Image (cartoon, rainbow, N blue to C red; front, side, top):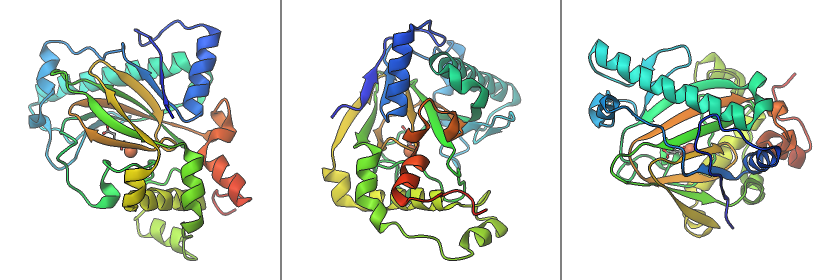
Length: 294
Ligand code: SIN
Ligand code: FE
């Protein structure tokens, strides 16, 4: 099993042939990680100072730039924060260029969400098992239901000291689903409505979100699966960019420090092959719609 597909692009808006484009699309939507080992996010000498934990407010695990422009999780003088924001914004712009070049049909439906700088070493982080991203998982968030919208992420290791970001990548989505879907519990009647009413969720949790959360939790809780399921370890070296559908690819971050990340949202219908989306896969197994009750 090798779920990593390497391409040697060296620019954020590469000119690529139709054949290469087809390969990239098939890889991404097929649940592979697109790895670009020769695509660094270049920091100016001045910006290198931002690779430090001192800019974090220590309350958030990331420094995030919201698409509306707000910078969250950072502390510093107004001048410093202006420079920090400009650096993160440039990453956002380059990640957007990259996705637009590789997946041109996405452009009209692609929505840029947060951009983050992740300043902390991953290896020493302690958290409850549900929040522990050192355990294999597909992304699903209790308070932030996607309702089926895809989570596309562009990562870059910006470590200056040669330290890789080490991930584990697990088996294909459908293999994991086959093992855990039978154990996934539904919501109780009225739960989705109540959670939204109480502000626990930002929008209504759909049957799809419930299943994705259950899969996330069941997989993370299963120590045997974590140790023994088919998986591979990957070292993303500094200067590497990688692109992944994090709602589809089982992943775990084992060690590493200083990474940039851009999240995009995309409706499943906007994919080249919508049937590869988690919502379509789960709906086809369940034989019913998992969207909002109409
Ligand atoms: C994750 O998405 O689970 C963490 C990725 C990382 O921080 O490398
Ligand atoms: Fe994750």
